[in-house]
Image 1 (cartoon, protein in one colour):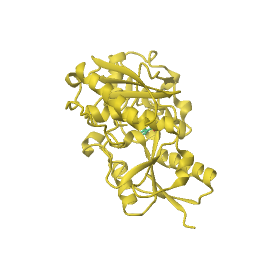
Image 2 (image 1 turned 30 degrees about the horizontal axis):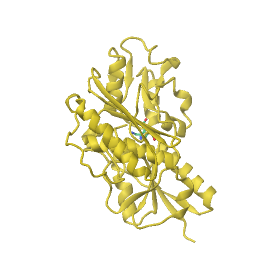
Image 3 (image 1 turned 180 degrees about the vertical axis):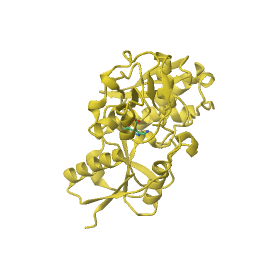
Image 4 (image 1 turned 90 degrees about the vertical axis):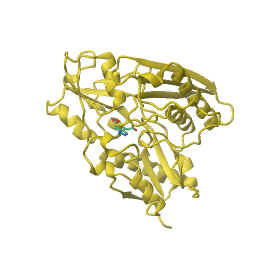
Length: 324
Ligand SMILES: NCc1[nH]cc(CCC(=O)O)c1CC(=O)O
């Protein structure tokens, strides 16, 4: 039997999460697997992400490999996938989500409140910048990029007082001990899909073994979060946080759009009963939240597109996640 070829980016985080996915597939199905490492443009280029020309730089090399039959399955960080569906591909599984919160990794175990005035905090994400400015306008925010170890290294070297990173990434790399503060989602919603993975496959393929790693409540929650961004027509520079959770038969969704300066924010939360077509409910709830945000003026405070949402549900595709 030929092994299932599972492709990943080459970063330590991507490899760690792909190895975990591969291990659960093997454990659940006994399938033989092979991990294929693919270099992406996003990994090679060290400039700021915004100069790379939009979303999807991390995903595109992997997707091309999938379409070229160089692999059978691709593991992505869901929040890095653009919202539009990719022709010929679909999301074959969404595994159970890790902690979706953002973490502060500060020197001396400091919390955000305890950072001294003017402390230097590194992040490249417009959402995190706006959130930091909103609560601590005195901080000096330093635009950084690079992988998680590089970012943590800038705190260890004393160059920065702190960085903000996803708890999920820290956890997957065994670095959660570096987190000195975990931000509650109700005050600090994170990127749509943060903490979740997308297992992408070719549209026409059927890989029943993937069912063993599918977690339907995670899929429903992240699709609702994605639907907000898709309906906001938010570009990659849009400071938008969204967080959804499935509780019994209820889907709860909250989203906030920030002015880049952090001086203003507009939030909305809604819930819906899950009775049947969960993907449709997720999509409609996301659209309703986005529409409310736009009615409340989100388009005036943040760089987002503002066409009125149509009454057709968006496909289950992908959306412009925020940047690292
Ligand atoms: N933008 C890069 C990226 N993509 C996924 C994660 C973390 C893991 C996840 O959210 O699933 C990170 C790093 C970060 O934001 O700190």
